[in-house]
Amino acid sequence: MGAEAEKRESENPSSMTKAQFLAWKRHKDDHASARRAEAARKRAEDTASGTVQMNGRELFAREPWVFDNTLY
Image 1: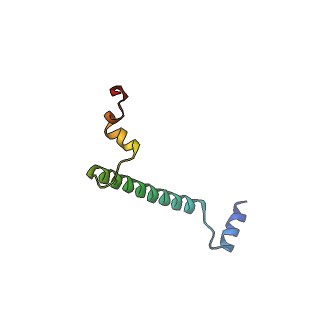
Image 2: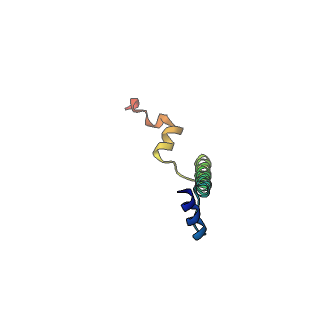
Image 3: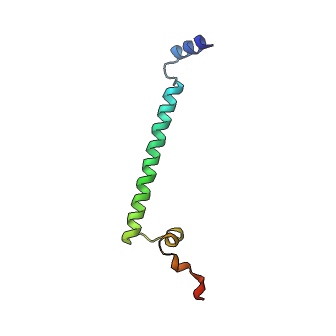
């Protein structure tokens, strides 16, 4: 079966080996992870400076006293 796979690869030069696919996938995942981390860092920076309004989760994490219902 190995000889057949090699023959198919030589016939179709645009085919991708498993190792090439895994390297591409790892690179793609790393790039996506870096973009998400950068967006999260920018969001935290903008929220801290007050240029962007916080959502409920961020407000609860940053100022939990706002959600204290013992005052009512």
